[in-house]
Length: 129
Image 1 (cartoon, rainbow, N blue to C red):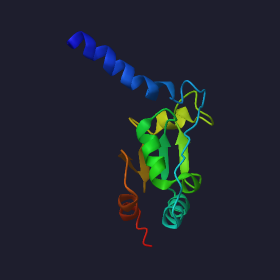
Image 2 (cartoon, rainbow, N blue to C red):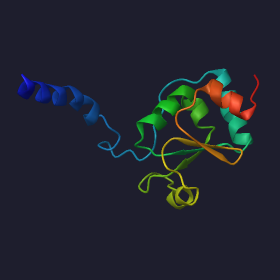
Image 3 (spheres, rainbow, N blue to C red):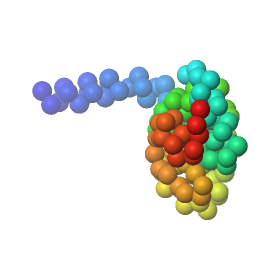
C-alpha cells in the first residue's frame, strides 16, 4: 500500500509543479486577483509612507501576499526583488538589510517577516480609511 501511495502523491502534486513560474521563465511575481478601492488606497498610502515589501518572484507566500492586494494595488507598492535572477533584482540591498525570509515588510525601519493581512498592515502603519 505504501509503495502505491507515494507515486500517487507525486502524481497529484505534479500539475502544480508544471505550472510553476520557474518552468515558464517568468522572473517576476504575477498577481492575478482584482483589487478593491480600499486595497489600492492602502497600497498608495504604504508607498507614500516609505513601506517596503522585500520579495522573491518564486516565493509562494509572496504571491499570496500580492493576491491579498490584487494586481492594480500591487503595482502601487514599493517592492524590492531579492532573487538574484529576478527582474530588477536588488539582491545586495536585501543582503544589506539582512532579509531572512519572504515576504518581509519594512515599516518605520522595523522588519516584519510573513504574510500580513490588509487589516494588519493598516493597523501597523496607521492607515485609516
